[in-house]
Length: 238
Image (cartoon, rainbow, N blue to C red):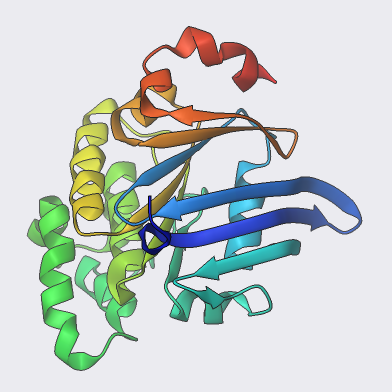
């Protein structure tokens, strides 16, 4: 791996709420065109880690994207420098607006000349959204709303996309759609960071993994390990 392959570097990442530290000393690197899965149970610190990296949770450490240090920047500025986060909570869409209007909101900061091509790329990932552009977002199924949230995050053509528990509460039939979309995004050169408890799904889409327990990395490895969940059970239980 050459230095040019690395799009995001995080060093000594911490996260805290008031004076309570929930993540400490996490180091990771993310390469272009790959997905790194962050595994762990409830309370392991996955959401807090993502929030610290994105700048929406009080944290510490350094975050560099494409050679630019984002560590001291606010969340909206980090987003403008190539980072996008789809949080764990559901309803990350404007429920009273149409699918098209939601997608257009995601595209609004992209140069006008690039918007149509990016819109077509996004809707190509999720054909159901293309079919339902006039539908009000609030009437979409949970899976469709998750697709729409991801579509909005892709609107400004990020270099790093962070997905916090994207399969939580969704029907298994949606997994195939997400898997295909993630593979296309990786092939386009996008780097993806995935927080996930669903180990079988992570095994389908991730290239590498780390296991987080009590806010610290306790194990890391390659895709082959994910095919044998029994070996990871102790680390995941923490």
